[in-house]
Length: 116
Image (cartoon, rainbow, N blue to C red):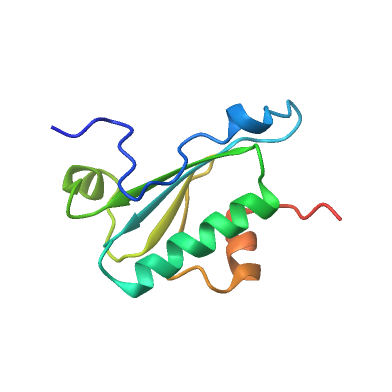
C-alpha cells in the first residue's frame, strides 16, 4: 500500500514550512507525473525544482509521482503522457506536458508572476 503523500523521487515535499507562507501570495501545489527511468522525466524533475526554488521559494509543495508506482493517481488525474506537471492550487487546475525546459512557457502555464 502506498502512503498518500509518497514522494517517489526524493524531492522535498513541503517547502512552505522552511520559508514560511506569505499571506498575500498563493501557495502552489504541484504534482509531477514521471517515469523515473527516462531521461526526459529526470530532466523535468530537475527543471521544475530549479523553477520552484527560484520563483516560488517557500510557497510551493511539489509531489513527484512515478506512474508505475502509483497508477491509481494516474487514472484519477487522467494523465495521458509523461512527464506531466499539474498545478492543483491555486485553482484552476493547469497541466503542462513535457520536460519543462522552456522556462518562460512553464512560468506562463503556471501563471507565475515574476517579481523583479
